[in-house]
Length: 456
Ligand SMILES: [Zn+2]
Image (tube, rainbow, N blue to C red; front, side, top):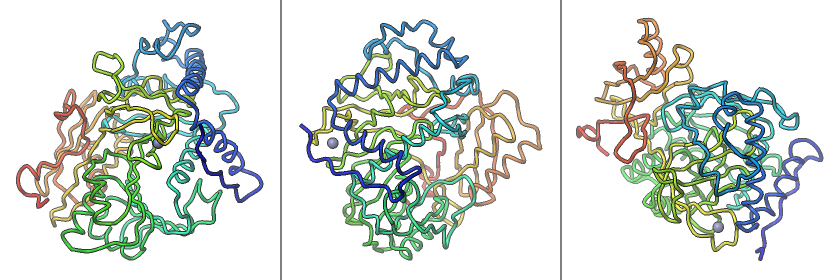
């Protein structure tokens, strides 16, 4: 049975982007109520098309998936297909891309990401994937009944030194895709590398109804507010992205801000993976765009409510096909949602939690590294930044050859600038970088807490 699903708003304009999105949103509005079997059938069809295309047009997949019997592939037998690791993706950068694309997939764009593994890779996506990602973005706004006449604020990572305090950046509306459907209030952006106290002043000034930020940055904001005994009573929802959240963080948002926390699981390479149910704290996998598996270390599928590594196939991106891609996060699938949506439920996501950087004056900052610029200096395979003291930073690098003195100086400059302070930076070379005890890789580690130099 399909509960009332709410109607899709009409786009403001008669033609253009809004109309294409409107058609797709109507489809998504239907497919969210499909049962598990219907969804799985659709996914298998998409996956087979993608694999066939990748074998035909990607030199990497031609080899990697050479043993696949496409005719007899079903959702149980995909377990026998090889996984794609982040390291393989990096080693085969370029070679993994499809040499040609269906015309209907539109313009190709390229991006660079370090994900949560400190391993930088180049990725391509298409106009088709960005339309789908915009539609899911819109779905998320509608699920959570956002009031578009409220101001929206975002405090997020940005690789360039833009959006700095005291003003950040002001936009006249909420931007794409919401502004295709609604006349919205203004939105504002502040770089998450800004000091926490400056962020709070900024929020007090613009009084947003919605705040989007990274969980570790949110934790630091709430901590600062407790310390100052300050309040912020304008916020209706805090939207988090980019790291895992805890039940504690959800409760603090209710207690301190009288607001709801709405989390989002996405990545630069895969777009939206799962979004929070409008009625519950767990997530619905975005099955129209991704196929998600949760696996044990031996590669077998986990049972429901059993934690394992998350493996994602991006069903519509033919430009850089990601088939059974190990994203580096852990999670748990769970029973179907009482809300009636057939989209599978992911109960918990254990991803990255980033430490905060401390400047010598004691101020806390969510660290930026400038890794995109590192890559213009040298072909870095993996990196990790460690804060040893108030002014001592170590940059651990994995690469094929040692850097020249000029390259080292250039990289230190980029890092200093990105961290927002002229720290003493030491570069060290490693053949590999280890994961923390929970198996997760952390691209930034602060050892100050352990040394008792950190008040929090
Ligand atoms: Zn639900």
